[in-house]
Image (cartoon, rainbow, N blue to C red):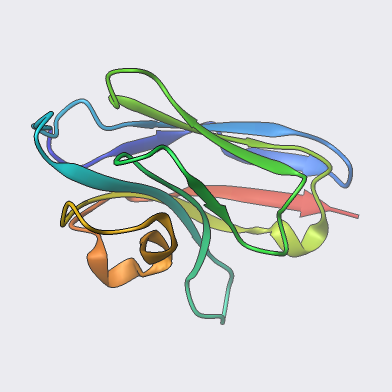
Length: 132
């Protein structure tokens, strides 16, 4: 399937951890092209926000200020699987988390990967609920 598929969501107590996985094996990557691989979240009644992303051109990552030091984005060498390790979870992290993949120009930079409009392929999302 071309659409990425997320897994690993669930319910945890404040301070707990979860690791989200995103199976993006259906996407035909080219070693000659550059991509943004990202995690986004949307809480009930709020706009979608970028959580973390990685630019394949140089491997540089981006994190939202609200998750810096707690979340880590990682990918396997083939880019088929993207991970989001979430530690020290807070109730405000409760949201539906989606992974996304987008091809970008070779002269792009990691900071651009925060822009959700750059992404073409989106997963359905996985729910993360953090209780206090």
